[in-house]
Amino acid sequence: AQSVAQPEDQVNVAEGNPLTVKCTYSVSGNPYLFWYVQYPNRGLQFLLKYITGDNLVKGSYGFEAEFNKSQTSFHLKKPSALVSDSALYFCAVRDFMDSNYQLIWGAGTKLIIKP
Amino acid sequence: DAGVIQSPRHEVTEMGQEVTLRCKPISGHNSLFWYRQTMMRGLELLIYFNNNVPIDDSGMPEDRFSAKMPNASFSTLKIQPSEPRDSAVYFCASTRSDTEAFFGQGTRLTVV
Image (tube, rainbow over the protein chains, first blue to last red):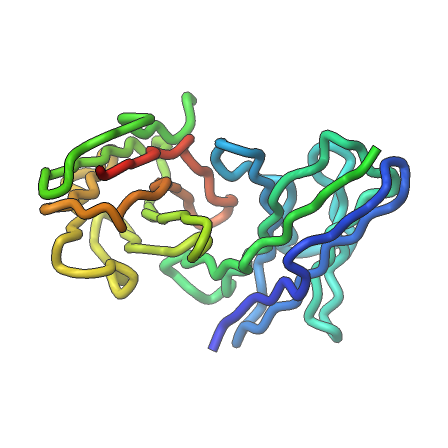
């Protein structure tokens, strides 16, 4: 069965420090992987995706993520956190072979950046 | 493109009333998803369509919920009769094969 795990409900980071939000996945075929961010009272916004190619993917707002096939992980990272990065982050996966393009979502991780 | 458009943005209704939420996906996208988000249950997939055909409605809570997609540019989610526990933010999203899913701004439903 396909699944996504975000093991941390909340991550606290001091402003200026590096941040990591973890995501691991399980799919039967090759994965398409996505990160989304949700600010309070807003919809989900796309941050970045891995489809194929370079394992390190760069996205919006200075975020990046590394695809690790052996560990089935796709952790979101940023070298220096900003208070404005505080939001809810979702990881999602889609099976490359799924012709219905169904996304499997993680439960979300609340990121809190403290000044 | 204006993105995924949902209406209304906010809806307050009394228990027992019918509620209809609307979604216009991005032109050219052939998959459409309806989600519900609450503090208690997080983000839940209710139903999704591929080429206007409902593929999986196992997430629809009960028979009071129904969704239609009469054409590629319009979908509705209907709740009849509505109950206070239906209060949530409802999101619509669309995608095609080689892109990420794009979300609308959501409809905040309050049933009193």
